[in-house]
Image (cartoon, rainbow, N blue to C red):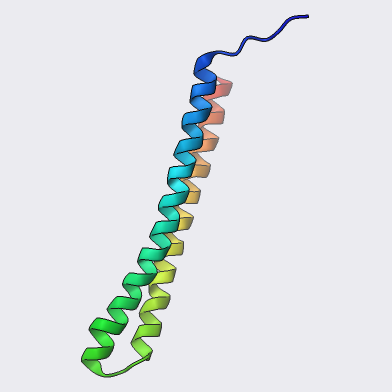
Length: 93
């Protein structure tokens, strides 16, 4: 019976890839929270207090912050998908 010998670099490469994905996931989560908070802060503390329009600009800018967070999420997901496809092509060559 022949045992396939794994290269240590394969295990290390998989571990590095796992940590990279964990880093990206945490970055996306933090970005969603921060962009929502920034939208809320702009709407509430800057604009609604200045124009005395509470709660309308708070709602609008909070929604814009959420949209900005999801835009970043989709951008990162698209980039990760493209990176994964490119690595498949490199491995086939």
